[in-house]
Length: 434
Ligand SMILES: [Zn+2]
Image 1 (cartoon, rainbow, N blue to C red):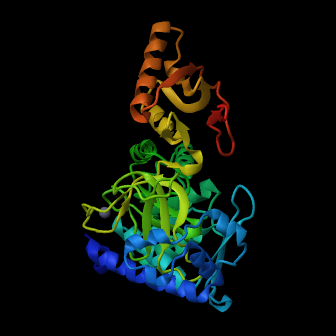
Image 2: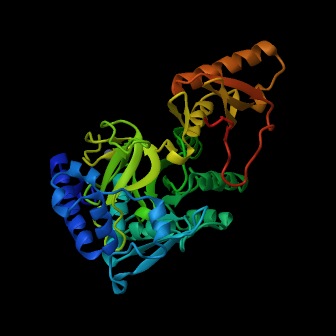
Image 3: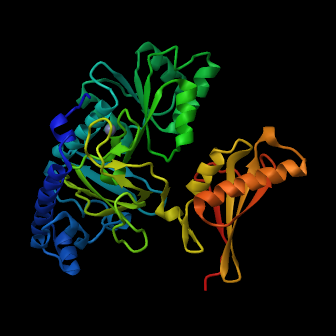
């Protein structure tokens, strides 16, 4: 195994947790002493720095949400002196005020270190040429990847987004071995390359992609890897936490979350209580080393699970499974949490239908009724009633098995459901609020 920082990356769990506790204590004391805002919040929650005696005590600290960043626009949550701020990134957000993230020199150093470890974990090194096709500028994706790749000693092609034909030329001419971008952009780039008669898998040196900044599925990974013959690595991060931060290793069995930099909890999205180890819930991040904007117990809204078992690669840090939904997207049907992404996942595994769907939830007496309209694949389109019944039964069985909720399935003609240019609206909730 090649590690960027093997001493840290293979430290046992006890050792990692001791580092986390020591950093957490230091962070809480510093904020209590130096930041009037954190000081007031801690007093309000009735917690003093001395109360943090074990990692479990983290739950006593008040959680933060995106609202806190917006309410304290632009920089009231910053805890480093203005002279120490080296950079700002700003995310526009779909509603309300943007959020501003500041970085000190050490913050940028730790961010780059996190990505350098991650890139090395799937085999990248100083011989690689990494094309960064994430946006450069106020968005943290491009520059984040750029600094991580430079830290690793790789050569960087700062392509940013757009100009797809030019991007393909650069991949060929500069012997690019890895590309960082969104999964949908990579698919688009590959289609463009095919139209130009270029096979990105065999006509270039490209052998891996670092994909993130939008949700994607295992089906998408299989599509990309099968079609292009390259490895598709999942990347996780968020602007509030710095930007892109962590990726999978070569085992592709969860994203290594570097425990010395970040403490991650998993909570029930409704009660805020910790779920059991290995159970799914909302992710809560505390960035232990950040100076300018140390997020404490940041409820990010992503749903997933964490595993602490040693990875087959030998690394010991907790692993994040694929994010399967957002708290905002969750619908509760007959007491069971249902996510549109689960429906999408099921539909992706059935050949006769497309992934175009619409969920409608209605009240039926005191109960909820869930209907999923789904488009037939053009190839499977038929007026044979028996065949259609068979497909309906197959889809509804697969959905019920995964969701544990009774689902009514309606097959629709290809192309008949609404299309969306921006964020798709997949759920219509018509329930009467009692
Ligand atoms: Zn691993």
